[in-house]
Amino acid sequence: HRVRHDPSPATGRHPPANRYDPVTGSPAGPEPALMRYHARWVLPITQPPIENGTVVESDGVITYVGARADAPSGSDRDLGDAILLPGLVNTHTHLELTVMRGFLENCRFTEWIDKLRQSRTEVLDAEMLLDSARFGIVEGLEAGITTYADTCSSGVVMQAMRELGVRGIMYQEVFGPDPSQSDVAMRELEELVEKLRLEQTELVTLGDRKSTRLNSSHA
Image 1: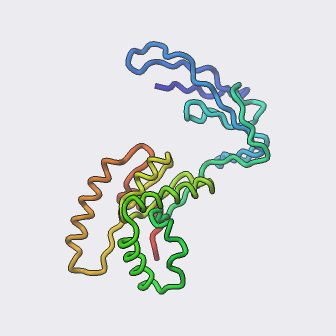
Image 2: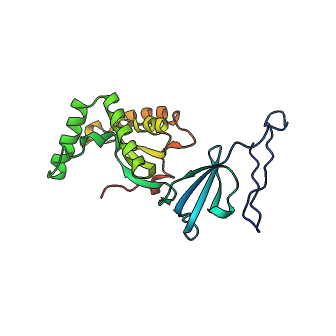
Image 3: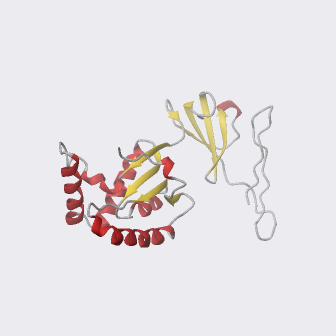
């Protein structure tokens, strides 16, 4: 396990941490090297902006956020005249449809949804939808978005989010205007949801009743 020490109230510096093997309890060697990211401004969000700030990362964990002068020693990466802040969150995406951008403009909703479903079924197979979701996530990362709440029909978005290392919740969509098909649609939905639950990770989860409040639904 990782033992983390709070910084000294006087200096804000972190004292050396002792690490132990979780099985044997023996010392596991020194802490991984520290990487220091310097920026003109650091925005912690939970406290005021820090001019000439530094964020220190060790083994994928942020261990320090504060003034550059008080940061612990480590390797340096100066981002220059930039703003460093936590990743943004997009609470309503349809990543599998990224490649359909601009394809269905100036349509009434009923016409739009019918053309969308028909085109997706006839033109895009599962691998294409997966590539579309990957592309949408890459675009988001370039814009600073690191967390997604996505509504998906094909179920491929969970795989795309896992592959690209982002955080996210995927809501499995079910849609059908024909009431006579509702029983079949719900049975297929239940089967797919059970399969997708097995693909969840610490960062990527399947939406449920507890998490729907995080997702912006259509009007």
